[in-house]
Image (cartoon, rainbow, N blue to C red; front, side, top):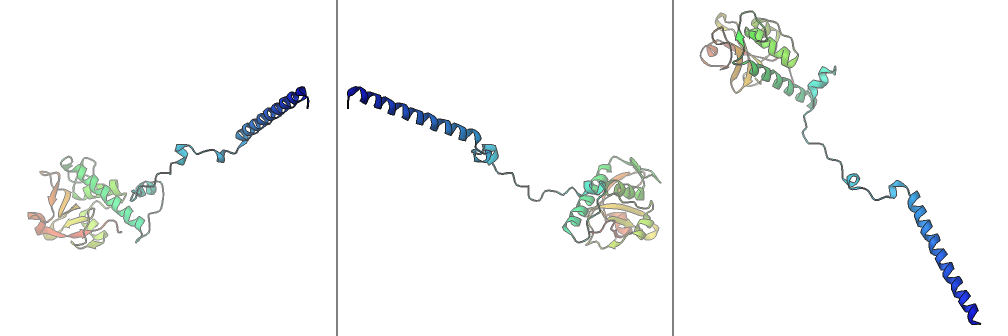
Length: 208
């Protein structure tokens, strides 16, 4: 084969290979541009799993009730959570008045109370429940519970010997109550001195 012809053939092969490589590169570029998003490598944020819910997180049952929801049925876990939150709120309201509010006969808050006006106020404010403004009337209208069954938020009554007094039980043998014009609203032991002598029993505002 003449020398000139061999040079032409070599040049043709080089051009053919170059064109093939250019075509391949163009195909890869087109494929990259049109590949579905699902084929792309996930970003670190996308690959990170969602945080799990915190176990035991409080259920905002009171907020739901204020929005018009029906109270949970008796015996359910939701009911137990609801009652616990209501009781805790009532006790918190009662404690907030101890040492700050005065005793005034016939008053029912927010800064002065008599005994039944105080229990009426804290249950209305903390639990959304309406009670009569009369200690004997509260005792007669509510279900009674034993001392062993008493829980924070229950009412404790002192009606023996002609007495007419009621306080809010806060646990561990203590109550918050509107005592009298000398002592105002304070914390006392349920069975201390005068109270022990006139103690009648406990009554429950909310069951659960």
